[in-house]
Length: 292
Image (tube, rainbow, N blue to C red; front, side, top):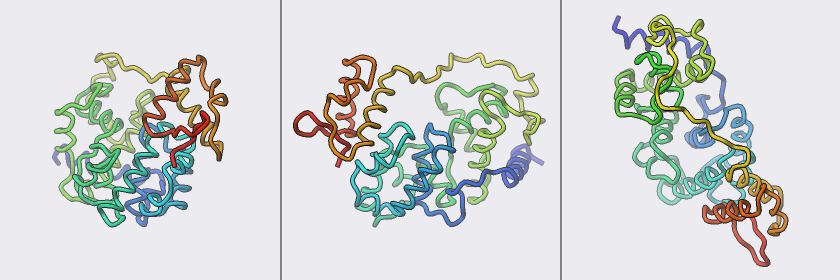
């Protein structure tokens, strides 16, 4: 049996047995539910996403429902998922769906790419997972599985390469439905087994075919992989300001935001960028609130 066929058989069989029971993977989940999950799950653990996703879908079960509400309410309902600009982009995308697609999530990958806040990964993921269509889905987990399994490297390159995309395309099954499942199966394998820090090669369904394992699991020798700092950063201060506005139903005075960071200048800088990004609106008498 060709290698690709063996990989398909083993990884798809593993996924059928070990896939997590996530609500956006349910057969009755709407394309909108899948779309919301993909935006929320960017750089955010799924354990934090699921409760907020459920609240969103109960409150705004369609793009039309979200578009009819204020962007500030979207930011408020985002809670502490992080990167609250995603909440604004979701609201903008919902509005675009209402204006251009009769309130529906478009099924065409190019139409999805044209929505606010939607990049190549999200467009491909929604195409595959919401509509069961053939698409090349490449996230961090898929890149890591490919790097180890096919190239013998512990980690993928710092940024996506043309060779990685070509490999991901080549590995896709021919059948559309199998293709969609393959994407999520490899992603799940990377999330649960072929993890970044503690890979469980002893339970991996393709460990005997893995070039990295065969080479003795050599250490990564590429460019330094930098983690994202948080404490004391502008991003932390921005998050604290947004949270204070989220907790208040009325505009908040500047004085109530002054201790949102270690330095007054940092707080002012963070507040300025939040206003520029549309996450905060100035109000009279030096007050601020979430956008209306």
